[in-house]
Image (cartoon, rainbow, N blue to C red; front, top):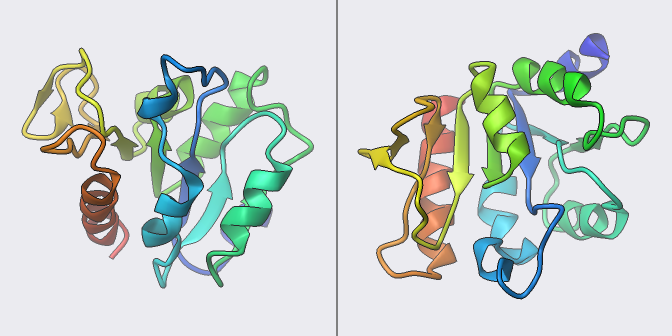
Length: 163
């Protein structure tokens, strides 16, 4: 597994685009897939989907937005096999993710995480970094729902992390 991921070109960037629970109350917390183009256009990154569940259609849509590789280890159940998720996240140079358990677990093993949020939530931060888990950077939209701003700031941070 390690050799398979590390032989790819460029820094390895994990991506997580949604929670396993997206309902009417939580839908505004997760961007549409179209917003991910700014991230997926990074010229140096090799991406790995850390998203769990039935993601085939989403992956097809994301892959259609970029010439960069997006790997998916479909043989793993990243929802139930947390050890595998943590192992893969620890190999990543960075993770760009919606606010999920996956983003927190990636940060907990020391991987820099850019957590996407266009809604104000209860999580405290200090100058854009999570006040409790310092490896999480969270660009906050000045206007709730401004995903363009969030992804623009996330891309700037990604540029810095994997320069």
